[in-house]
Length: 528
Image (cartoon, rainbow, N blue to C red; front, side):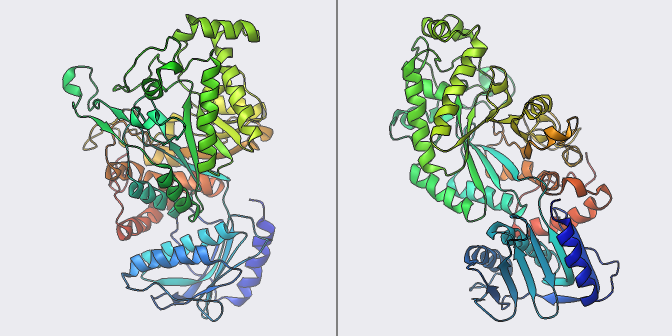
């Protein structure tokens, strides 16, 4: 926490102003940095409570009134004004950028944020209290800020496709838990989901597969025999990006390269080493069909695709995948072998490093930064690349020790497509593994590294792969309530409290019910 001195000073001054403390507790997730709750007295929020907007904070005000209108079920949103009493929101540059301070008194609720995002997060805390406590907000003071600047969740829309409304609903859930990044997995072997005007074949051909694997076996009975596909137009993507931005969520797009590219190879066979004809893949896992790293036409293609991606997504970080790329085709490809000789490369791992380095140089030249899965370390990578550590924590530790920024997302416990209970009873079919609420909550994203390396851990992310998640309802049940545990790791790492989390989760469950979100009952039933 960077501003505890300010928080402490403000808190001390408020002790004089507020009634004596009692055993009343604030059941909020994620846990605020500091709370000072009065023994008695509540400010009651109703549909007629005015939102007093200072410093042109109209966007967070509008988002809050929308949420409250849905909660109260009223025809009109709560009124807004530039002055008067009610819920007042304003800025103060002395507060951390995503932090906020909230003072609840008899006259008003005052929320002060370091930025618009800070105000928004303060309003999300207030929303939780209103929804779960019949509109009554106890007198007191809250000071809060996040541990990590990158608080992410991933969504795979390739293995199963989700509508624009589905993605927006997912964003709503993330934002309510104070996450600020959506890692959007848009391309893979099983489909291409983003319109690229320079290569219309990518969606005309690459967005559809012949059938979908619905079991764990390899017999014909485990495929459904139904054509499957879908993609987002650029207009739809702009709409989703804008929707997310208004909720202070930045979308980090992922365009997979050089592996996980069979859908692109189906659409544009000349991208392959032998320009072989391949289908959009109907299997899960890893295919040997990858982009040719030896032909200059491949780099021209990648840059043309990324140019359109950069126009659609303002995110500083652009995800290039870089994972699970078999080198079988490269080993017998005359183009790849010639490129290795020309560039003085000793092996195919270095060839992938060469491709990654060229793409990073392109992104930097266009004012962006590259992020990739931890395999990008295998072929050598510059210190300016950001590494997403998924094969465990070791890659993240190594990257951080050498000076790379890192997002920790180890498969255990950050893969939310894994089963939630040890018994798996009643869970349906999933990819495998076991990541319970408790395992997520116990995660230490800074374990095993030096103090200098810890400075390079910019955040934590949970991943939602969708091989066996055909609907958003299924996705939500895998997301909730584990996202609450993840949000405490991301927002409140240094103040997690296993002694209070179950009580706070019982309160948060009321919030989920009020929002109409799907969640699994296993944690609440005591099933790990």
